Length: 138
Image 1: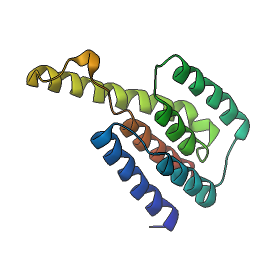
Image 2: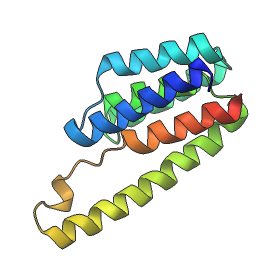
Image 3: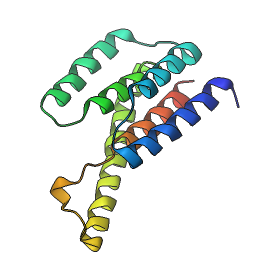
């Protein structure tokens, strides 16, 4: 396995661990993914990335998604071919919907927390989709 893919696998597993355990994605982890994306796979389509950055900032501003999720998505998207942006975003939304459904069912069955107060660990679908998007861009 090439060094770039191996580093992204390790970093994506760390994203999943931190988001599940602490419900936050550390800045150093997003920076490491950004660095690995640029060094191993090269920055692609910076014009589209600017539009995506503004779109994600709007979602963050209106509190639809958190700041760590925005930074993580941008770190992955810099190495994804612009032709795959729509596919990767749809994959993020699909995996997020599946994760949300699983969390709702688990919370309803356990009765421990209210669904409205539970933070969904959205770094998981972003990390998995971003990694698959980079692999598809190779």
